[in-house]
Every structure is written in structure tokens, then in C-alpha cells.
Image (cartoon, rainbow, N blue to C red; front, side):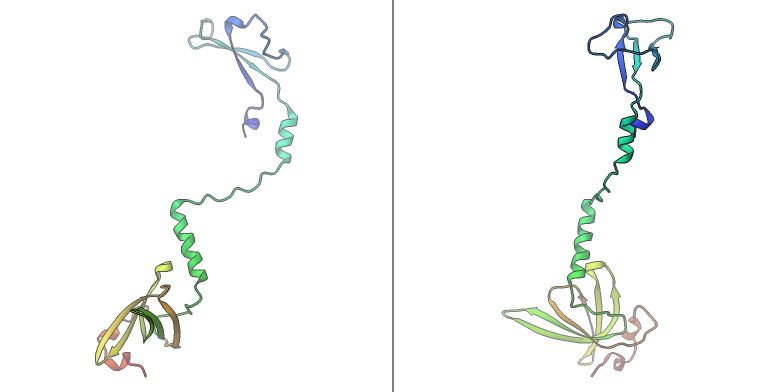
Length: 191
């Protein structure tokens, strides 16, 4: 980008060396570039801190080489906050135990209970709410046990959940079925 804006190289020469030819500078052609005096005080007075700026002519071969070469696409920068999101997406894609579940579905959940030995416990109930939060997605299941309404919250991507099976889809018009708490127990009872 700098070659397009300023195609020539600039040399800063102190004014006391202006009359002498320096061995490290290439010869200067008056037709290709001009000498201008830059002063910190006034333009007509030369002092110790004034310099002569010498511009070299533009080389066209460098500009052509840059336009012919295509730059490879940049890799996206992964920030520290994005790493957990990437890992969560990979974990969700890798989990195959979660079916398409919605509010109002009647589900069977096989949960591994850590005791002295691992055993599977089965919970059956209606999903009254679903909280979408990526890998932390939870469902709230309601069931009547011994005449008492019981609600349990399950993280669906938990390693302790071995299987989620949808027994029946029910058509509901709400996202949260909290009104079932006040209804008759027969609406939350399943055979």
C-alpha cells in the first residue's frame, strides 16, 4: 500500500553536506526528481537543523510484481473468549443422544445414578419448559408421583444422561407450561 501512495524512496541529507557528493548515495538526476529544502524555522533561512530531501524515481517493476501476486486469505483470529464457544459447538455436534424435543413432549430419560455401582434410573414426564443455552441447555420435566407434583431440571448434554426417548408429541400453544401446576393432577399423569 505504501508503494502506491509514495512510490519513491526519500533520503534526508543535512544541508552542510549538500555541496559534497556522498559515497553512500546514488547519483542524482535533475530531470527525474527535485531537491527541496525543509527548515524548522523559516523557509528562506538555513540553520543547523534544516535538511535536504532527495526523491528517487519510481520503479514500475516493483508495482507490477505486487499486483500480479495474489495474497493468500488470512486465517481468522481466534480470541480467547471464542475458544469456549468453539468447544461447546463441537461437543453439541458430537452428542448423538439428544433427539428433537419440544415443550409439551412426553419423554423417558435414562439417567446414570452414581452410587456404589452405576445403575440406570428412568424418569418419565412432560416437558414444561426448555432453556436454550448451547451446551448448558436444560429441560424441566413434571410428573405426579404419589399424588404430589414433582419437577426435575435436566441438563440434556450431561454425560450422565444415557438416552432421551420421546414417547409422544403433544401439540401445545405455549413455550412454558407452568399453568399445569394449578391444573388437575390427571394432566401431568402418564401411563
